[in-house]
Length: 399
Image (cartoon, rainbow, N blue to C red):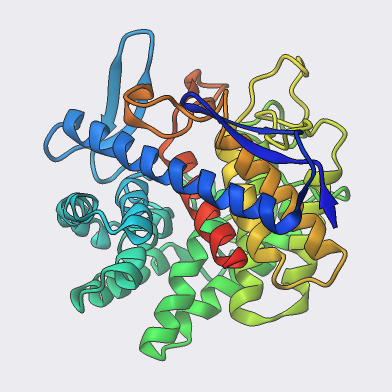
């Protein structure tokens, strides 16, 4: 089968372009070589970022207009992505400097294993210590992760049947679609300890999210508020999307990834069906651009001039690559091809940062929270993390 595509390296930008007829194998070999270049450039970027990072702080984002690196403490929900990204790069190039920095920052992050004020311990601890356990293991990491799962479980309420996402005023029980991403930690904890309570919490949470978070078109609300006594839904709305009824792009990607993970651990068909519904909603949407990198909201009012969200594209690409391994053809080929397009769009201008720019982050054009006017059209640590994860999965599937 012939494909009129090739990957060209032009200066420091990498472009996915129509060029000369090559076999599929030749094109993919060229693509893998391109991604090796991206990984090396990304590693250099994170060394540049490391040198700008204050002691005891975690990178959050970068403001180009003021050349300011914004940082956070270890309690910020994104704190696990920096060590996780370092570990993903170390795994691919064995650069010891990256591992040393990852282990340094992990020692600062460890105390969050006792944090019961956030639902984001999966992001914080499993994207960091979970990856460390796989890539550069230490026995101590297991106990850290088990305690993290215990802390996360403390936010589950049996009356509601969900893990509370955000603490709010009395009478609120707020759950966001993002919370699907934190359930992987619970499944790991049950497998490691033999205690089924963690996975039972994850399953109950996922089942109730299917019941209440999704619309007839398979898009999801961002936030659902429950009555903490009866468990009844009191309101469905948004925090970071355009409107209560819009399809916030990163929220759709969180759901896609989360239900793909649910199927991985349970092999329950309903979770695979849900992941496929979300994937098809995103990929079939008339407002999905040709390069497959979503606008920040599928219903943003100023499309095609609306901002793109590179982080939503990265998360979706990583999720789609796993989903390809669970579905039959032709869906498997379609999801793989679209994930491939997303990856090579991100590995090119305007998304991939030039060396020693962008504050040291890998990707540009992330969108954090437009309604609050924070992290708008900036780099995001989770965008980098899931881009690296998508590259890893793509390479593994081709090798």
